[in-house]
Image 1 (cartoon, one colour):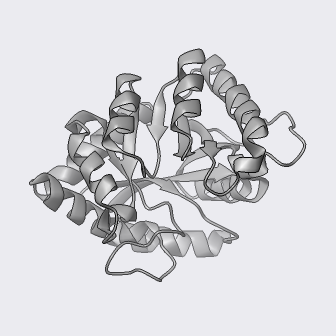
Image 2: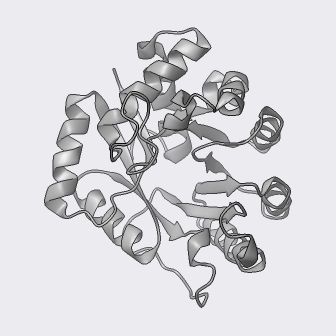
Length: 245
């Protein structure tokens, strides 16, 4: 299998800890991992992961919206800008600041011709409005919305990534959405250390565990895990810049 974890956080992990996780990932068939930032600490750990062979995304996420907005400059070579976006489930009170932060970073990524990694939760209308205002390309990560919202994002040209949530018993909307995403727009991720898939719920997630998400998604779509791994691997290459990454 050729697996590509397109979204992994290494929270407070040392180079040795990251290296050990990457070794376990390789043993499980994970050929590539994108280490994703979003805060000062996550951006730093993503850079460490980059020095160990990971692809890197850096940005400023919605949880930083209550702080003073500062000009962000990536600290290392990045293949994508993120994660960025909106979350009104946990932080509806910072909506205006989230929108400002999201919009500024969409513009910066567009100027650099970089794909973006977007988090969106309970913010469908505002997400779509900003993407109309600032045409962008990239990944909607850890999709949790409806099939209708997914179709609109697909119309914008985005790739949609599914995490271990697709294995959760009460995630019917996520499975329904996963069924309508075309083969050439589908991605998988762990969003580790969060959202460990069944049968590993309750454990700290890591890239090696993506095989369970791949198996569940392949079964859902009626294809083999090998087929699913190949098409999602190739899609990740396509959105992140091809074989040279």
